[in-house]
Length: 178
Ligand SMILES: [Zn+2]
Image (cartoon, rainbow, N blue to C red):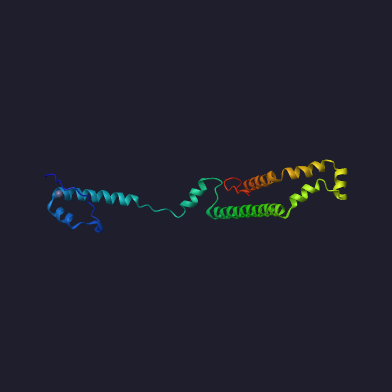
């Protein structure tokens, strides 16, 4: 049998069937043999790939791993995580809201003139501040410090906010029991 130089893939499925190929296979014994071999191989591979999954396979696999939750429990755990993430995010949101409020108050205080009030408070001859200075001598330095750290205080508040947000970030991979 003379080996034919015809090169093609012998895909004999109907949707891939090429009229030129069928014509050639009718006349060429070499290609017809190869096509039959290819088809046989294809059939074997296809049938080998068809597997039926037993209905109770999932249950058996789950039973192999001790401590693994059945699908229903896994879903409820997923729900728990979602709820936990929601609680965490709403906590973060509320912290951010409070932080923005405090920062807004700070800006408002600067605009209204609380800063000037604080500056004059250190020399304010009022009864309350007198009493405060007399009974708590360190309060004088506290007021002075408040004036001194007014700008850095904003940054400290910002840092505390960032730390709080970072602290309360939900960690789904850890603490799954929460
Ligand atoms: Zn041929």
